[in-house]
Length: 287
Image (cartoon, rainbow, N blue to C red):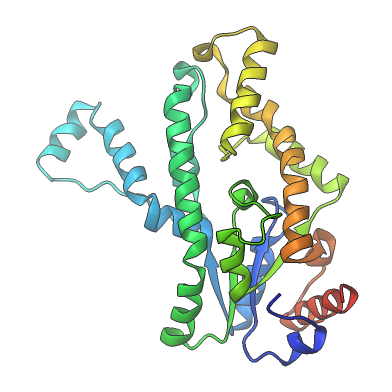
């Protein structure tokens, strides 16, 4: 690890961290808190995906929908209007909307083949964005003078890495430049995440093998054809399984590549000093 002890961490003139874990457990909360302290650059993987690596896909998808409307089609063909996505740290909806949900088109779903194609695009985009971390570390200090750096990852990072492989290209690259920190939830957090998702199901990205398994199981248990699947019902049915699938993958990442803090510890932080103390104590415990 980049910091081997509490002393290493406290004495480091440049603190660099990568937060990972399920969405909704505090990654963005602690990132925003540190950014507001003034010395931290906040690199959002999801924002980078939406602006650099999937921006054209997202815009083209919106244009394809607009081309179905004669009034907008004429304006587009004459270059009279511009269509783009308004992605921000607080609004990443264009990315999730593009990912979409598989199932009945009448209910907002898409064909499973198209869904898989977009999933593959997202996987490559996320890997590319993660590998850009060292570039942004250098850029943040060179251009803006930020000594400290946060990489705020999406929940699906664990899907594309092999934490048991000491030569995993993504984890090897990240751990060379930053301390990997897993924000771990307990059973109560998991139940709350499931309740929250059930109220407002959002598109997710899945490991291809996991997606194939749950899709086939859903069709079999529900006794329906692919184009009859209720998209929201499918992703609700899948969500708890996705959490269970990801948990051991996060655990392996933390065990082999970083440290673990709890969601409760993160939610109790009120300042940069609190964060420094928490990481120092965790490093000391894990020596």
